[in-house]
Image (cartoon, rainbow, N blue to C red; front, side, top):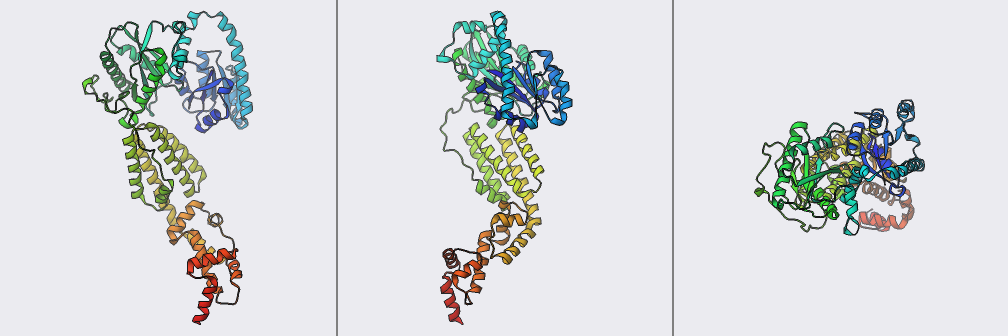
Length: 553
């Protein structure tokens, strides 16, 4: 698989690039994404991709600067630049840096883009064959090690074993893994490009594990997250409890120093013990699961697989080595109740009714249940559902489409930076309260639209009137109009329209017109349906009503 990194400041464009290509089918995989050149260089600090796809105009560091820096690292890396048609003259500067190809965004079609990538793949394969023949094993050991470690982390070993020669080529034959640590940066951490991995590696060297028989391998997974694989000599002389104490101590020191010296907040997840390279994926999954528990326990901590309570000192404290006897182990693998389900209709009804207090109670109860369950994936699902409700409601109550689009982008950006359940709870409470407040403002200005709608219905009741047509007449979205109409009039649009029609029909029934014809005159074309609706509202059929009127006379 050839590795690809996408650099583009617009999330939607990055998403489009990922989605339009079946990467695996053409022998490629997207191993990382960045929003600007600086982030891209940080991503490439521990290993270059085979292909770099980059935009030209970006904040912080643009594509021209990025390409210049990349060319200092490699003259052979394949680069594809993305450009708008009006920026093509600007893009020519990048072409001077031995760019492989360029694509105009407005003309970017999946088939054409795939052809560009396949051409680059052919070029890579042609350049790789002589290199493979000439290179000695000793020269490719670092590359082989990184590739092997990534595969072992993310792909379970074939048949549960690894050949000794494979480990030997990577320099791992005389070592065995003990634990995997995931170093998960905070959403608001902004290390200088190229610094993240280098700084952590330097601090790990300074902190050390205080044991001559312990070592480590530092490697990024395909998502760019750093992992420390703690290793030992085959004949390790340190006990299990002592090793864990040292891992906790070293991890706490790393968190503390990253916070104090660089202002970064990281959470470290530690796996359970692992004894064979073939079992590394299990440890990788455990470390990632432990790190994700920051969602419930807060950031800037050390979290150990199988533990649910506070395990390490946060970065604000001066204590670097707390008493490990105080680490409390809690339940693991608890059976959860059936999945939570959000009632989007209930939330929408509360929003349209301006029921701020009820909505707040609903969200508090929802997040309270999430806190009890401690299921990170469930939190993600619920958050996405709530976000979908928000982004569906806003277009109903805003006439500024561009403003709504910017608000959606802002929502996605802010939500991606939330790290704990408490932060998510606060964010959604504020977002929904802002929506309700906006609706209250809109309500005061849109009440005249409802008056206009009722006047239109009373005048043109005999014509075909739909919710879509009447809401369009007063320039309101269908859903917003329907809810506003009910709130202002006290009944739904259809109930009001039907009532007006039946009132007109009652008046006509005092004359000599046939009951079947009267239905058509008031806008109800089906005689049977007219009779059914009339009886439902008045309690009698049209003919019975006419007889009662005549009897009274």
